[in-house]
Length: 243
Ligand code: PEP
Image 1 (tube, rainbow, N blue to C red):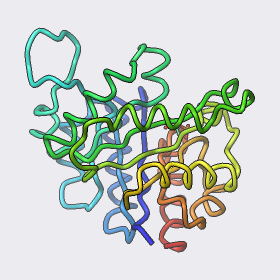
Image 2: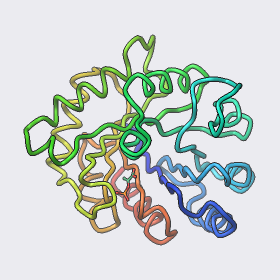
Image 3: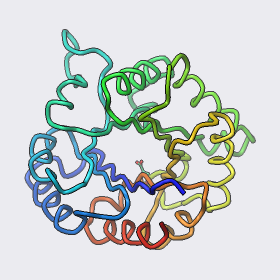
């Protein structure tokens, strides 16, 4: 069994002083976990997080990055800025970036390549919308997203894929373990590599066990429930029990 990874995506929340307190609480509660634990706070917290989480074993993540090193790219964040603060992983291709910020497959491919090239762990998010699922296009969409993002990569070392059905993100509607497993098995068959495939979409303490118990599911990318120590720690505790 691959080591489970529970990664929290704070999105555009807790980026100010309250986030510093939350990071300290997370550190106290989650240091030395048996499974991999990661937190991706907003960029403004990364320098603080790098100090607060140092030597805790908790991986520090970024929610996005650009694929160039430096230059006239107003508002963007270079991978080397992240590395400077000891960031371990970056989330690329989240459905909110695809939908709200118009990130297309070409851009996502460049970001994934750059992240892996500079030695960051990369969580590539893929997943279908509700309309696509209802039209029976789930596998077609996921296949296109996965293959286009990985095209031309010499190796998948450092890559993790998060299957995040868009209809399950932030909606409270979680995919059933069977629905998730079907897509995870499909992705595994597609890439034929022993990388981790996480599930994301309304994971909470109440539904985490059913998902994490499945052999096809190697962990979770957690949005809303990663904003409270109680719920995030509970998901990590369940992962430790299951692993
Ligand atoms: C996410 O944004 O990656 C996510 C899974 O969010 P939530 O857990 O809130 O659905």
